[in-house]
Image (cartoon, rainbow, N blue to C red):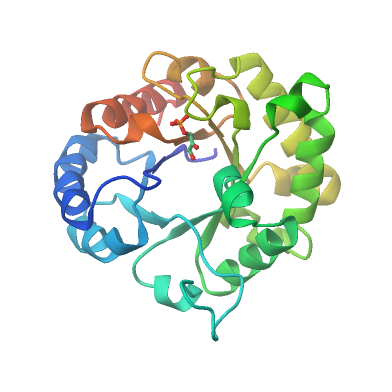
Length: 256
Ligand code: 13P
């Protein structure tokens, strides 16, 4: 059975001090749900404080990006080695990073391989724009993102890889994808593509999240879908009560 994974992507919210105080409260609220992987992804400046505050709690830390270069003269960038010991997960391929920071499929693939080589786990985000969705191009677009992201990644690494399907039109808009649509893209397109790239057994080991306006009120419907293993959550991860409710629903629906 795939272990459910709920990750909070805080984006550009919460100072270092706010983040450290927040996770102390969050960790005790999340303590009863040890069978769900619980991850918070603060900004880089808050990573060290959050990692300290969460040590021994079972709640894990994720970073929101990493450089595709292992080291070198890259002003403003964060090297993979700098994240070791601070984070277990790193989000790559987020649509906001693709859009505002020019992250390409090739960079995402390079980052995924670099993270795995350093013992860090990528959360590879993918998803289509409203225009692509309305033109009926979702499946081809997402399939292309998955093929590019996984190029050269060995089947043995797949249990360490998480994919997050986040339709861009559903992020921060309140317009969440229907659970049936999300299941179709996640099951048929993403897991289906992984099955053709590897095999069914390997594809079954990849955990795939849905993201985009996930809230306590719609979480159970997503978790009831067979191929949806968790959620990547923006807005609703910024409040202890909401995030805890999301984790508790995942635990209940998935029987974890
Ligand atoms: P919201 O949950 O705020 O829609 O954000 C989703 C997201 O982008 C998580 O990475």
